[in-house]
Length: 616
Ligand code: AGP
Image (cartoon, rainbow, N blue to C red; front, top):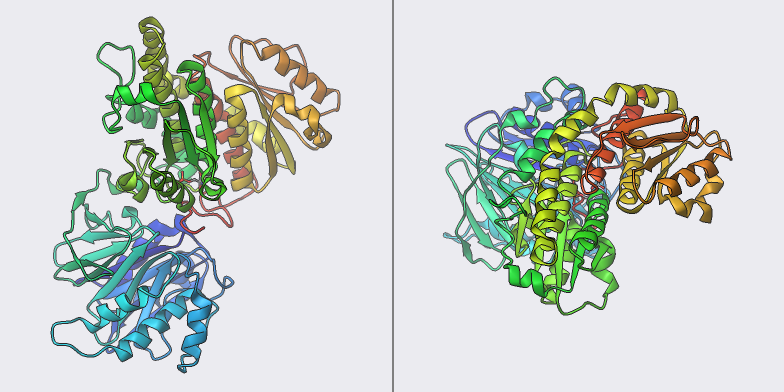
């Protein structure tokens, strides 16, 4: 959840590191720091707060030297203090390092190092790692063909339990960086006379589009002239250089105030990218080139099991509804963090899907590995190309929505909803869905981007509602069937960026407890879609009204609510049932966005959160 960056080259490292850190800040923003090598010593600048305050309050930007490392922190071990900020220097001054992850056996290592007279400034697990490297470095014999520094890091990592993405520098070899990963993402940026490291491509894309995705257990020695990758067992690794497909501009704000706002309004184009080239020539179904799963397998499976976290988990709940409805295959949806430990009894012909925007969420990755260990095929729906989940899955679908920088997921979520619907179609057409139904389904899905454009025109109305409701401290979000997960997503969005307490429920569940929260101070956002559930949802609204609860109703054009029942009515375009969850998501995204703005929240970097959760 931290962001790490490294540079070795001919340019001034500090400015390149700071620019990289600014682009990684969505990964964690408790503190930031850089270290460079200049005039015979390490120069370290670190501070609680954002990269901007690091640049304002320290000499960070003035640090000289053409090699260095930088870090932006999401605190795990030790409070948010300057001393606990990275980089950390070993007590003998030889080793400086940054780390993304959790060292689980750090206490035992610290106890050992204290007996070897190593001293500690901070409360972090990371400083323990630095001192252990210094310990091995001091003990490491000087061998003509071996790199003492590299071997000291390798030896250290063999004793470490937990997860890490690290970058380390040594006072005796300041023009080199050693980096390694286990569980945390790490990318090599290959340049001309310079080489870089980063937790993700956004930090280095302004300098190169040639990258190497490091795998777990790999360790790299980096210099301006080149790099070499080996394993912890000292085996050589042949590097595969990939080309990044998106540009710096994709990660720029442009005319928007926040990335979340930009990404909400990018959804029509993002959905077009998600579905591009993925419908069959005969127009009756969807096709996915990378699933590596023949039709016969889809016919054999007797259950689909989704694993995900957060918003992605909500998207899986909608996919569950659509696949069971249109493909008649039983679906199970698990929080990946629970699945990896609950040891569920699983059927023989179960197909697993892991859904993750970042492709680095550690619980989802562990869920994937657990299912594969049990011999199941695991496919992935991911947005970040080259992510760990994408590389470890047996096949998958990339979302192609471009970089999602705002911590609150928006365009990635609606793209996952679209892919869930396309999957229901894909499997349905392999089973009992007719050519005609498939064709109608395809036509409906193809209208989605335009229908979202239509829905985004509701922004001014939602901005007005948000301003008038932002003072409330509690909200209920209510929906039925495929809109219940969208109610959960609406509640999550409001919680994570405005810090207002909100709960999502199936509307009928209200009577079994949540209705106790209903009062003039606890408004309800309720989806009232056309069709079989409309009258039932109207009854739920009347129960709320009877208790003086305010109602923000989200309906479609063809719905007619009883006069005066709702305080606010947000009217979506009419659409196919499979498209409705996507359209219904847009107003709850905008409502939470405008409420957070009205409350002066830091929308893109909400407190206590980070974009990609790489620690357990
Ligand atoms: C959503 O707005 C949050 N950022 C969070 O719940 C997120 O969906 C979750 O951490 C899963 O992330 P992933 O899709 O990258 O795996």
